[in-house]
Length: 324
Image (tube, rainbow, N blue to C red; front, side):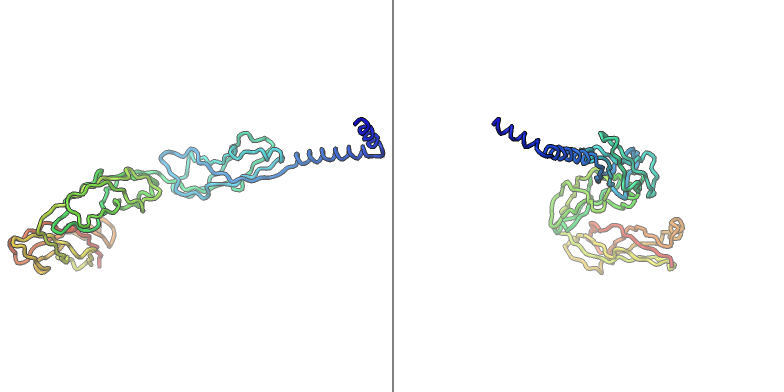
């Protein structure tokens, strides 16, 4: 072994071999130094955080929920960067309300070397802020089907009768009515009691409370009960106006002493406009078209005896009135 080492030393001292190896080693060290000190660039997409938004405000629209951050610096530093230490945020302490407004995006960095420069590809973001409002709505049961023949529905109870909807002013104000999910009463007899969800198809971007209600539907058995559909007419019309009704048929439920079935010709159904001051109502609305609700009057022709009208559905009807 000693002879081998001596021979290796002799060879190493021959010619320029030692200088060549030393040069190679120095080249490798220099390359490693230059590679580590070389500048580079990396990019991250980071979310934009909203800070200090007042509690009575809500964001309705935002042009972008993230932004691209460009980091420049030495490669050795860049490869150790954790994207979680870079935060992009917008200060909405004093937002402009009801207007799509530009806001500057700011950067907050933690444990990032000072020598690394961070810039954003997008310096501003557009945000629409609205006031948050809450409004109560009566819950309308969405009933489908017909109960067992000879039975009628009593007064439906909803518990709670109202729900509260909270959200952006524009979203809440466009809500007209609130319905339950569909409740089938087809062929049912006896009272119906169940918990149902509120229909949420038209309740986007709002908070609903509560989301469920209890429905109590009394089903009353009348025995030999008959149902007939009667057309509704409008009487005592003012010729200065044009009238149209949204539902021209009313269902009349009745009983007779001798269980005799009656025909349409035995009934008369109408809405009476005699005591309605349409001119004044239009003046208050400042429009030439209004929609009013009127009770439906149902009576028997020829004063038939032994006939008991149990109920009429609907009890009221909407009438569109247009000034000619």
